[in-house]
Structures are given as C-alpha cells and as structure tokens.
Image 1 (cartoon, rainbow, N blue to C red):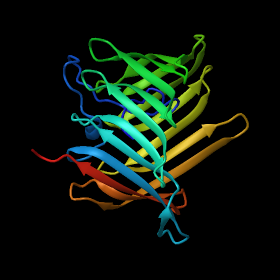
Image 2: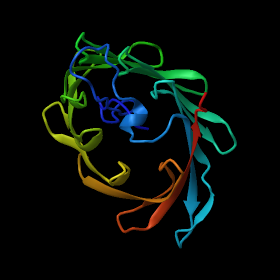
Image 3: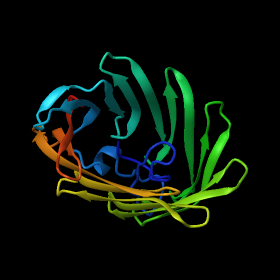
Image 4: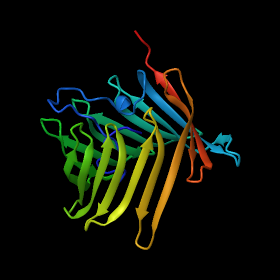
Length: 263
C-alpha cells in the first residue's frame, strides 16, 4: 500500500505520506496513485502472491493472501481487502480523507468485526496536528503529537503516548519527495528500536529495503530485494520477484489493474 501517511511507520495500522501545497487546505493534494507514481486512471489494484521453486520459477499460488486496493474518483485509496485463495475475506480497511485529499483515517476489521481505527486532525493550513488510535471496543489506545512534516507535507516526526498519557515512543523519517528513504523508531528514553532504509528505481518502484530491529538481547537485520519482471501498456508493473539478501527468490507477486473507462 502506499501510499499514504507515515505517522507511525507501521507501528499501528499502515504508512502513507501526502505531499502538500503550502497554501490553503482547499488546494487538492497529489493523490495516493500519484504518490505511488502509478500511471493511468486506476480504480482497483489486485495483488496475488505465488510460491517459487528452488530454481526461482513461479509455483502455486500462496494460500494467503490476495490483496485488493480500491480507489475513489480522485485517485485516493478508499478500501483495502485481504482474502485467501479460496475467497475468504480475512481483513478489511476503509479509509477516509480530509477535504484537501490528505489521509484522514482508517477503520480496520477482521472477520466482519472492527479491530482498530485511527483518525488524524489537521489545522487550517493543511498541517497534521495529531492522531488518535482506538481499539476494537472504540476506546482510546494510543495518540500521537509533535508531528513534523516537510514543505511537501511528508511526516518526518511524531511522538506516541498511551491512553494514560505516558510517553512510549517516537519516530522520524526522511523522504525524497514521495519516497520514504529512511525511518527510525525509538523508545521513551531515545534508544533505537527499529530502523530502515529503502531504495527505488527511476520508475519509483521499491528495489531494496533494509530493516533492523533491536531486541533486548540481540539485533537483527533483514534485507529484502525486488526485481520487476513485467509491466502493462501504461508502464505499471504486473509481476515482481522478491529476493533475500543473497539474491535468492522467495516470492513472485502478480498485479492486475482495473482502469476507469473514459466517457
């Protein structure tokens, strides 16, 4: 997913960033599709994962999960669905947006039951001022303050507090326009808990991600690489191979796009 508001760098729901005009909130921001650097008037993206054999050739479809992203008339994501190869829906997310197109919030559900939700607040200048996250019962779980962002509106920092206003962690990110290239999360005393870097090709497609997690007794680093094997007539990728740090293929993902018909 893309997409979309990096206020907690995958700490709670998902990440996404929004480039922002510095003037009035009435100015529409670049859409989620634009920020993902995808071409064409897309209404839906479906991704299907496949296993690979020892030679790296595509095998049978993985049991979980097919992901479907749906986009509104402005090119902003409005729904996410995850389902098994048998068509059983496992997770769903419904997104909302501020009047200027900025990401407002998301409600996540599993097996038809709400599991969590998040909503952001924004001032009259189009700057994020905070966010709250609620649990499955609708009660406050955590909230975010001290949100900083670039001139383009990408979130570069935040602080997280629990429902009792105890400071728990903070995060910071570095962006190259739409692309998040670095992130770091720290605990309440400033110790790094996780960090990551990302590389992209000239199409804006992710080519390598390095993730480091710091535990109590050990630190682990994982490098994941991506190659793009096929594109459609619009130039959007339709097949991607995931590889480990030794360039061994671990998964192949196929993508299909539904484009809106011209009137």
